[in-house]
Image 1 (cartoon, one colour):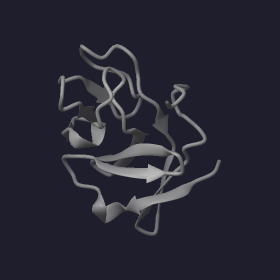
Image 2 (cartoon, rainbow, N blue to C red):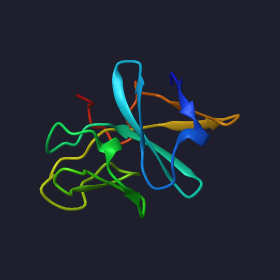
Image 3 (tube, rainbow, N blue to C red):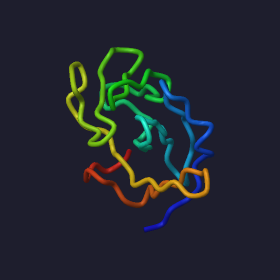
Image 4 (cartoon, rainbow, N blue to C red):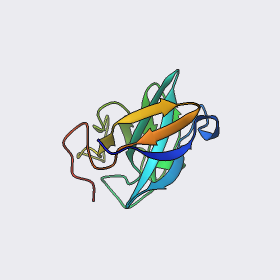
Length: 111
């Protein structure tokens, strides 16, 4: 695995995601309690940044059409989105968030 620093953990808000670029991908970093998640920052329904949506109950909402995605699996939880978004491995080290964008946890190829 090839982890790269994405951001400081303190920069990730509790109720929304933080949009960052890691290598060649835009990534949304989100927290649910003590867990940290990384997913491609692009709704599978429309070319909209997921990091601009709200985070609640281990999901992130696309602000434009209201689809929500599970932070763990990237799967859409409601319409209009029907396709999952890529999720990436995350490590938290010394207060920083590291993401491996060369590997996906759910087998979805990032676009």
